[in-house]
Each structure stands twice: as structure tokens, then as C-alpha cells.
Length: 81
Image: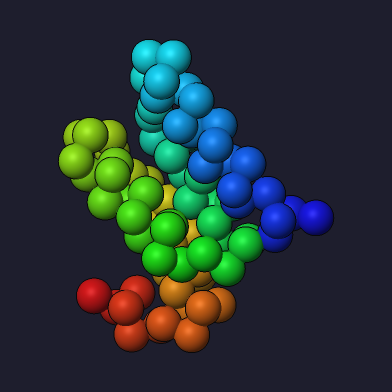
């Protein structure tokens, strides 16, 4: 099930970082999208913050997934900033 794969996606991101593989917009966005599908809105926002700290550019896919995650989690006001 797609919704249950968010933990695996986060584990993969962590493994990549430990292996010194550069995380980019695509890899972060995949993690955010996995969190969206799994209803993990707070973790999705955490990944967005991680991207900013790492100076990785976010894109429309990233933002849409974060907004959707917040909406699905009942935190639509958080998505508005």
C-alpha cells in the first residue's frame, strides 16, 4: 500500500545521506510525496524545512505535496502559513 511506504522512503533518504549521496529536489520531493500519501503532514513539513536548510530548491511538486499533506491531516491552516 502506498500510504504505508512513507517510513521506507524516509529510511532510504537517511541511508542516502549516510552514504554521502547528494539529496536533491527529486529525492526530497519523493519523500514529501510519500509522507503526503501516508498522512504524515508534520514530517512532510519537516522535510521541506530540511530542504531549505540544505539549500535544496523546492518546486511545485514539493509544495503541492506539503499542502495536500496538511489538508489531508486536517491542518489546512498550517498549509496557508
